[in-house]
Length: 139
Figure (cartoon, rainbow, N blue to C red):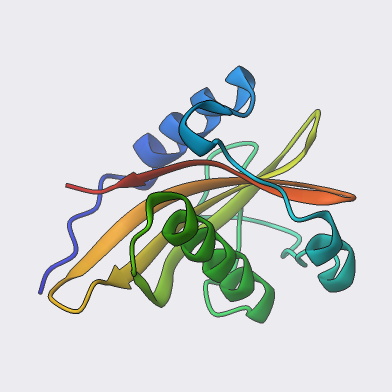
């Protein structure tokens, strides 16, 4: 099984461009879990990011807090779309600081009992909540 993924830069262009439009409440919208963010605290990041564009900081995809954030994304997506995707691993992770908090971009590998897929996700995290802003299956 091969995971088809767009370039890292085009993924973040999609994710960052969707952030200014706010959070949609259409068709169930995106939800926040304020207590969950307070309990876990912010995700720690490295001090430099040689592999990312200006403004983005690369994160270790195996970092426990990054993995927890990716599992949150898949759980929210499953609940909203009534699907049963299973988290496999984080392929890529990065964040940027925006006015409303930290915007995390994740490329997540998932399975659905038949095949392996990758999804691009954007999560907004601030002091008291985290919100799934956008998620898109890579074709």
